[in-house]
Image 1 (tube, one colour):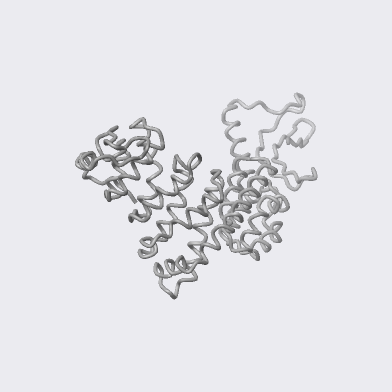
Image 2 (image 1 turned 90 degrees about the vertical axis):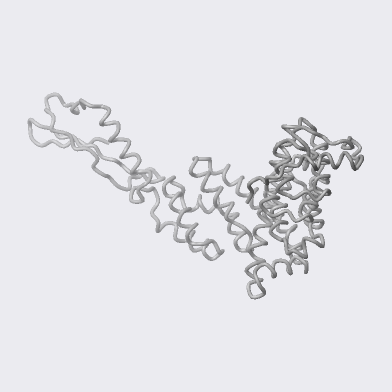
Length: 363
């Protein structure tokens, strides 16, 4: 706003103020942002700015300050105290709360609106379930100025998926062989901490799979079948977690989930590390692209390579180069027909003789 101040009969002074409004329309404060030179009362006009680009930059700076300066925020930090106390009681950590409240202040989101947006995270925290993805999604929505109703719908869906995932994961985590694997990884004294960390990881991965339209029964089947004797003996619980994360990414999961489960379980049983498991979906797609073979043919080629005891690193390099059966790019060894027959030993040997010897980089 511009305020007019009459100094005397001949001079009038104009001052430009930034005005802060409350939601009810009343003003909550003024700040002087420009004090131009005095103007003649006879003209009764605001002095013209000779350099409008300078004025534009100045006004942009003022606007930015109004958006990001807590002193100019629409709501004071004290107004979020009740929300903060409730969130802390639910188990949400202080650092995330500070980020959330700061973003709400910047975007003019009231404490009640913020409570509505992230309310689903409270229930998750109270049940010791992963709530961080919900808070992160709310932060992203506020940053992009997504309507509050849309943010709430997304956070509710995410929270629902996490709760469904817990119903799948918790009975599996309660199995003795799973507990033993987790205990062996971290040591008996830290089993409780370790199990909690693994539980969070598996729930987050299962929730991601559900978001990618993977059926609940597919997730259950994978977890049950992943516990082979070799996996349990090696305490390879981290590899199983990587397999669960890779499950929805496998190109065969939507049309033939049983094929994805079989391939991942065989890779786990063969000793693939978590990093190698994580590369399988991309390697599979690369093999499809370079070989121009359908997914079922690539799946059979991958299956044959695993059963031939080819090292995991070599299998990945084969697939990334389009070597579906272990031969040169695009080569399908004799016997790898649509019926999945093994073919002669000679054909298998020829494929093995063309295997690359340099493993690809992997985590």
